Image (tube, rainbow over all chains, first blue to last red; front, side, top):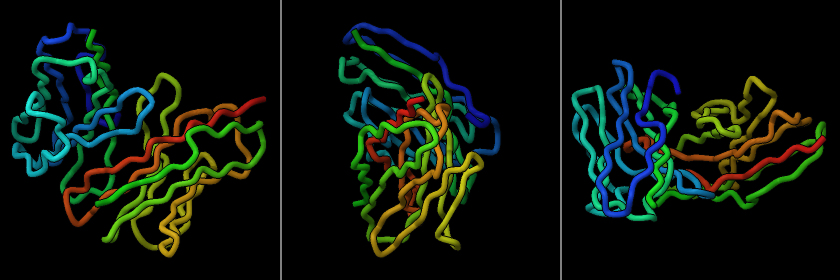
Length: 113
Length: 114
């Protein structure tokens, strides 16, 4: 994606474990979005950051999911006590203020066994 | 609430034939509309977008989409497809008066055969 990296690219974990996914945009992106794409489905919005605050968390599926962001930089998405239904590709998309287009990172493929 | 419907989950077509991938949306407010493409084993890429102005928008690789407000549609078309167009295509809408988060359709897999 344009100016964003995500790590790890692949993560395999056992059910019940916690995982942390990282999104690292280049500087200048005030907005940042997280989405997930489960197999055979479209992308689902998870959370939106404006700077380091999250005015829209409406897409987080449960309280096992949380996210943080440091200023206009790195964001981490944490999933606690992972379940098999959490298996998906997790994508982040940074954006500048008042931008009209989101460009997606390469994603993290999470597999929960 | 906004939603996007892509009625066709799969569209098989022969090379050099025309194709239309359908997208309908529902929204009570003005929206921006997007088509994203995901080639096999690659990330999601922006194909084209409608923000305002001309209702017909084009991509650099020959795709076009027309915003039809009365029919709440944003169908994607190409007059002659190539094998390399084989991919998953996602239509999305954003509420640009709010957070600009994207609401995606479930995707249409375009399979181009020789």
